[in-house]
Length: 482
Image 1 (cartoon, rainbow, N blue to C red):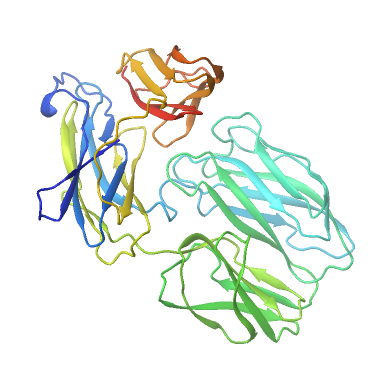
Image 2: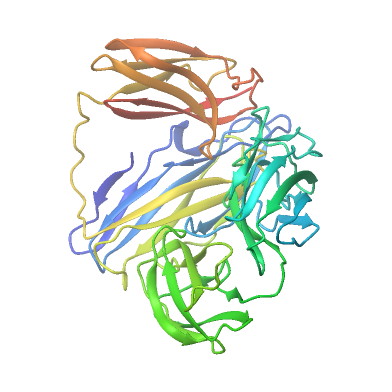
């Protein structure tokens, strides 16, 4: 945990110091031959406590812990965890053939899903939610993925939610650029009319940055009748409180007035925006808080004949303007070298009493990919002296560390109870569950051989060991060097 050190009285600056476990002062190790670089940033997370109107200078230490002779080329940027970005499956598509239905008929649809990821976020799950009146009779697996099939769960019934999942439990079965197909057979009620919107989700395997899960709507055209199609916001927009935005839709078939509602939790709860608004006019809305990354708008015919809502979430968000990186925000490091990156935090203009969240994303030529340092700003909180660790808190150590090919993980519980010890990568993905079960009080020792759940040896890099127990959590960073 980073420590909070107040600056000299009257300076108005709070400096947060993080230590890096390296040999003295960034000495350059001998580099007789080229090797693989390894990015490391300390501290791994920042928590900053400031009074409103205060500021802080924060040092982070960037190191190349890679092989002798390696050269790390790195760059840092402010990352907004509130918004999608980075490696993701954004832009993936979902289509159906035929693209329409007929009331009172049974149809088999060929579903096609394309993974648009450019950087190794592979699909491991798909859902398709049918409305009442659409009775699902059968479905088949999604086939065509390099990693294997996505298996149907065989859900059937009126208004069924059909799921397809990664059957072999790997890193996802549909690689970037691949298209997979499945079929679903549906009997439609004779009482249906108008277009049907079928919400869908796609899930990536979690590699890199968000979004790993995206949503959309598969529209099946139907016979003419009253209808509404919400156009804006329809997913992905970023709106700022206080600005004026137009909500747009199209309507047909005798829809003359509409009610508008807003959800800030993905559709679980709704708040009214306007009632009885003329259907042929857009609605001008002055955006209000609170902030949310999971907002949707719903437009409804006042006569309850039809409705529609945003196909995916949009964002009501305040841009991150309180966090900045001092130049230069990047550089080159030989193996064993350390550089210091200074971060400026300024709370001017921030609403008091609410924590602010951000991140610092470090990109580099390290094959492990980007590294994210979470940043939490506590407003209205003054730095306090470090409190001694609770005697009840679990302890976790590792020796040797760095290691090759194995290390011993030593954990200690103050009281008997259930504990889980797992190995993660720097993006928080679990690589291996080492143990989970009841353990006595006292010290326990377990060995880790540097392999993942499937027994595959992991490459050189930084990994996290995490212990979770009833007494709390403990995390230890591990360095595997081959």
